[in-house]
Image 1: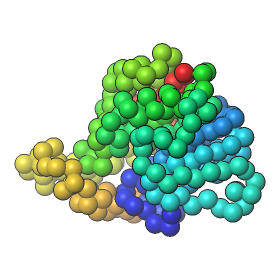
Image 2 (image 1 turned 180 degrees about the horizontal axis):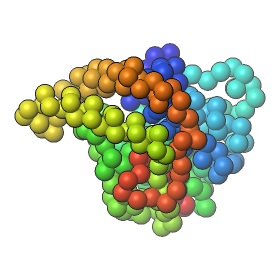
Image 3 (image 1 turned 45 degrees about the vertical axis):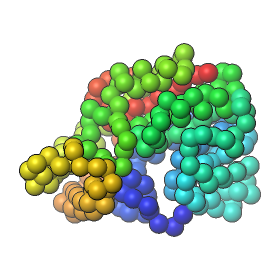
Image 4 (image 1 turned 45 degrees about the horizontal axis):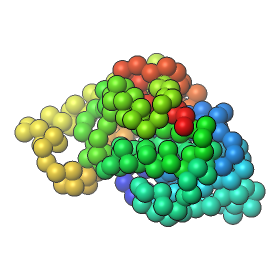
Length: 258
């Protein structure tokens, strides 16, 4: 996939997205410590996760609704299969055939999240694990019209426990530099939201807000980079940590075992 579909798809190619890109990258770095065997990634996006994880698997299956770019070199070195498909269901994946399912920043886009998790449970082998991330609703700065919903820690745990008996709820946290950017971003978003006099972001249909949100989101990121390049340009995935969850984590990092 050569271009970004929306501002939802972060890329290392745009310097203004570095903060969010590194935040997503830490999840793959942590997942790399856990996975082996047959790995299924749901929502492979730009494909950088495949580069991070494929070498730790015996077979790597990637699913996305858009074409994901996979280099020929990576394909030759590893057993990679790409499936272009909407989810759920996971109708091209056999029952109890997968050791690990990785799905990062996806479930918030899924209409039937319970069905999504039940399908993941179905394809996992007994003892197989789901590794999932999604934004923490408590830390969102505005309504995101590309998201069907977001979850606080309690909601996330309850949803996962509906399909899995063994759930470990962790979170992605940022250090002082990351949180300084977060606060600057928060103030910038608040300035933009002052023009939303009638709180339209909360009652207009999502489809009406998606394009304006994309435009303002990208404008805001570029503006933040212009004014705070010493922060934006220097943040790395090591400025984030994954540890026990609480209400202030930026993303949920969940491990659920079948």
